[in-house]
Image (cartoon, rainbow, N blue to C red; front, side, top):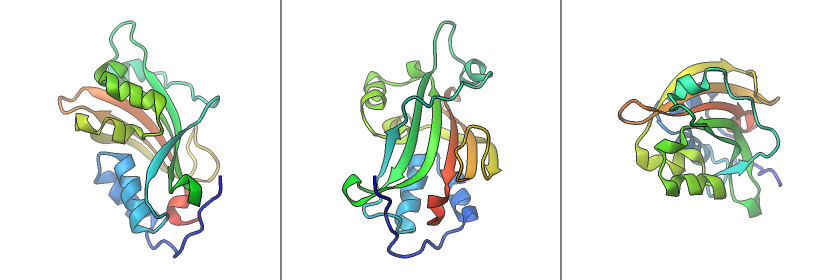
Length: 178
């Protein structure tokens, strides 16, 4: 997969990106907006490339955090979120580990997550969830690959407050054009 050469150097800072992320319930939507505004790819399309064989261990507090019913297991998705079209090169903007409560999704949403490169935020957008940042680290955090410039741990909640997903997001230097 070729990396996309930037037509012009991005002008946004890490602080600018963090502000955008904080103002948007969906990291996917924030990345799409950032990719477009920073001219990182044309079209500024965000896709989730599944990562196989590199699963993270679930956090010890996962069942409690997601308020999973007895006997219910969390769904899990490990992806690299990329911006750009496959035929013209892509930029890996983040790597994410996502544990979610599958019983709180529709069957169509579960099918989309299991069979497509649709990012989680886009697949479940109709649920009108909100995002609660739990932790933020500048640089590499536990579970993040080298080259991470920002790591977030966040909880996505449904409008009634029920937890939907716990995400660990590792944003790469590509968000800054590196």
